[in-house]
Image (tube, rainbow, N blue to C red):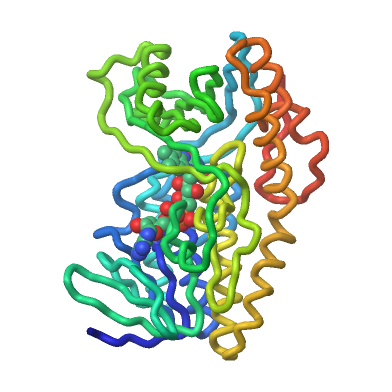
Length: 364
Ligand SMILES: Cc1cc2nc3c(=O)[nH]c(=O)nc-3n(C[C@H](O)[C@H](O)[C@H](O)COP(=O)(O)OP(=O)(O)OC[C@H]3O[C@@H](n4cnc5c(N)ncnc54)[C@H](O)[C@@H]3O)c2cc1C
């Protein structure tokens, strides 16, 4: 058994974890960043759309961007189509993740790949790399280990809702500048998407019933007349949809990103929130570890909620509304979507927020 010591151990080198490791290292902490994967960011489990403002908030590399997006088209179940402005980027997600992990390493964090956090241990955690075990002692543990957070389970946290997504990458006939979103009674509790990325597009469906995800994807491909020979690869994954956890810190553990439920419960977008909350988590964890004062961790909960709490609470309420009004009647479902999807004025009616990532006004 190997014994490693550090100030902050970050579990998960996705956007939340790498941003946390970067800011903790910048705060002067000794940081270990570990991930069970062989390579950061691979395999990609993402539709790869991010809002344009993200570039201003993370150490971004222009080669992450594949194309710009100007607008979003929402296809309602009753056949109506609404276009809203929605500037953003389609990115190579693996490049972004690798870039962020490299920035954390450059700031001094030690990156351990193929290393899985398996159980809590006195003063830290136990990690496994192949058949070797390591005990990692740390003053603070940052749980950035995704929607089914192992570290979160150690402190009894549990998501209130997860959507299952099935997605494929398909060849496109020609370039597209808008993302396409499809609501249909068959995609219960979620929606389908086609996000163009240069010569290809990510086409996927996220919905409540995991077992129906592949059928729903086939349904969407048929609807778009995309034949099997145009499918280049498949992926999928889980998306938190129940809103943030009630508590995102306990003792010396803080949760961030999908592990904390900071994903937008209506859109399922989580990359930007993971980056921004990861950065806050790392600053607070670094400071708490350097000063050896775990009570400072409480500040993380306050800071991220000040910034994002109202946006996510509003989206959670809209998610509950949409779930409660889901219907197999196309007109009733369209009415419910108009009241709860970000493209429509009703969505923002009661939302007062200066959050930089708030969706823009519709241009119906
Ligand atoms: C199909 C799909 C499409 C999506 N499309 C978009 C989109 O277009 N735009 C958007 O903004 N969001 C999208 N999302 C959501 C987005 O991908 C997530 O919100 C985002 O990845 C959250 O980042 P994270 O760092 O919290 O978690 P993750 O990116 O999931 O990173 C968690 C990391 O922890 C590691 N890990 C897990 N357990 C352990 C362990 N025990 N020990 C060590 N390491 C561990 C994992 O290997 C992983 O690298 C999509 C999600 C899915 C599934």
